[in-house]
Image (cartoon, rainbow, N blue to C red; front, side, top):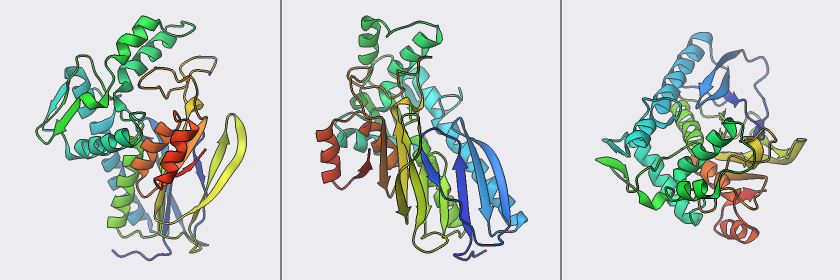
Length: 312
């Protein structure tokens, strides 16, 4: 069924310090709502301009797609492709979506001088275990160094036959890129269903079309740092927005040790509190915003000189 440009979709996810999407639907449009989970985050979908049967069919397809992708990327599902890779250090016949994401991760890894590195999972696990045990202060230096020895995306090999780690004890987390990838996939699914004016927000935002008023989808970037309000307003047309915050998730009860770890030093000695990136790909914006948290002013400027639209 072909859908007109007057039909619009808003997908919202509950998350801290990300982007706020303006809910703007055609006057009088009936709204159908769905809520569920995507990579451990609560997600809601509000669909305007489609009858109940069409809305339910779209929701069911999105739910199946999110579940299918979680079966590849999730760290919380023991049977996911990523979990199996982490357990054994190799994965035969990897799903094409995993290969696509690893290729993108490798490109951003090179572009950011290694600051974006999915193989920080051993380091993440060390900090998570340390603080969940009620310990105070940082983990032991020797433990951190041992975990760092197992970090390095350069030691990941992948092709259609196999993904493998070249160092014993390596593991990956794709949390800094997979949320954006799922956002892109849901947006692609909606395009295929004929939705040409869509705002998708599942933690990262993908704007399709020019919004209900024709001048772009209006989004705002939160101030962060515990402050309410909007620091930057943007109008997005056929572009994605991703936001990362160092203290959006923390390890310790005091809320001082953030979840974005430095692949060469462990805890970052300095960092940017928040970084937002606009790109055609939500996955790429997701990865770049994660790396930008760890960048100094010179590295930030270098990214901007390359054409990356980045806000701190």
